[in-house]
Structures are given as structure tokens and as C-alpha cells.
Amino acid sequence: MTTPELPLSLSAPSNPLADLAHGFALPFRAMRLILANRPLRRLSAVTAAISAVLLVALFGLLVHFTGDILGLLWTKPTGWLLALWYPLAFLVFAVLFVVGASTVPTLATAPMLDPLSVAAERALGIEGDDGFDLVRVLKETLSALAKTFLRLVLLYVGHAFLLLLWLLPVVGHAAWTAAALLWTVFWLAYEYFDVPANRYGLGFDAVLGLVRRHIFLAMGFGAAVQLILWVPLLNAVFIPVAAVGATIAFAELRRGEAMRRLPPGDPDETSAL
Figure (cartoon, rainbow, N blue to C red):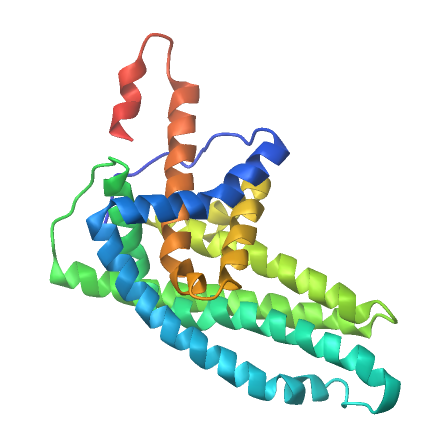
């Protein structure tokens, strides 16, 4: 599903705290848009059903195996050290669940992301080519799977690198937990901003630059998506909510750039956005 090309130069960030709050609000604005639009509701329901099944399976597996995974780095102790081991096991469970929940359902629902983003643009009044072409759909599905896989590789490479923090004395475990959560938040922002941006021809470097340029907006958005992952039942809809929320953000950034370039007395130029 292609849409008209847009300039790579997007609007500049504003106040950091305002951007953080604006980014955090995006998934919740996306929920309202989904509930108000029938095509978005249908696509979101299918995506949420797939995600729900996978999240339940992931939760069960981690409950069973987290202790064994932690045991590879620190054998379960006895006595008073258990007071440290169990909280650490919970933190490991939390990080693994966030990473797994960001990975497994995302890969399984990758073909749904583009249609969700396009439907969100239509709900926002942004026009485009909605004609059906089976060959194009198949190509875009394979492309979505390949790009999602590469983004997931990036996620895991980052987490593998962060394991070095375990070597720090005393603070290693806490440092790894904090860094891993921050990396996942950043990756979630990149993962979903890439969905609408990629349709407009923005490659890896351009999307990464976009996220870095609007880092507070992106981190607020990623933090909200990660929070949704921890809310039972609501976590099943995190993928459509994230895809639609990122599309809203991208549309607003485009509109902001158009308004910044607009000559005085020329208000109609943004109607094409």
C-alpha cells in the first residue's frame, strides 16, 4: 500500500517535557481513533486476537523457565541470599516478558502493520491509493516480515551487548535492568515509527534520525506502549494501538513541517497532508 512521497526534513522538536507528555498520550489517542472507525476496529480486532494468544503462551513459558534462565548466571542460592534472588528473578521475568512481548506478536502480526497504518491515515483524512493489487500485497507482506525480522535482530543485538553490564560489581544487575528497559522503550518507538515512515521512502538511517531528533516524543510513546504491555487484557491491543499511535505522530510531524514552510496567507497547502 503506497502513499505519496513526502520530504525527509520533518519539524523540529519543541519543549522536552511537552514532547514527552505528547508522546505518552499517543497510544491513548490511538485507542479513541480505533473505537471511532470501523475499518480500524476490524483490523485491530484480528491483530489483537493473534497477540492475545501469543502473550498468554509467552507468560506461561516465562513463569516456568525464568528461574532456569537466571540460574545460568546465578545459581539459585539458599538462606538469606534468596531475599535478593527472588526480586532479581522478577526483574529478569519483567525484562524478558517485555522483550518477548515486543518480539513474538510483532513478528506474527507484521503483515497487519501496514494496513493498520493506512487505515489510520484514512481515518485522519489523509488520502492515498487504496486499490487492491494481489502481487503488490504479497510483495509488501514479504517486505514487512523481512523488515520486522531485521528490527528484531537489532533489538536482540542491543540486549546482548547490555549483558556486559552484569560484569559491573554491586550495581551490575540494577544497571542492566534499567538499561534493558530503556533500550526496549527506544526500540519500540523505532519499531512503530518505522511503519508509516517506511511507506514514504524513509530508510533505516532516516527513521533512526527521526527518532533521535524527536527523542522525548519517541521515548514518551515507547514508555506508554511498554506500560500497556503490563495491563492485563489491554496488552492484547498494544500492536494496533502502537501502529496507529505512531501513524498519528508521523502525520502530525508532516503537518508541522508543512505549516513551518507555508508562506503567510496560504492555509490550503496542508490539505494534501
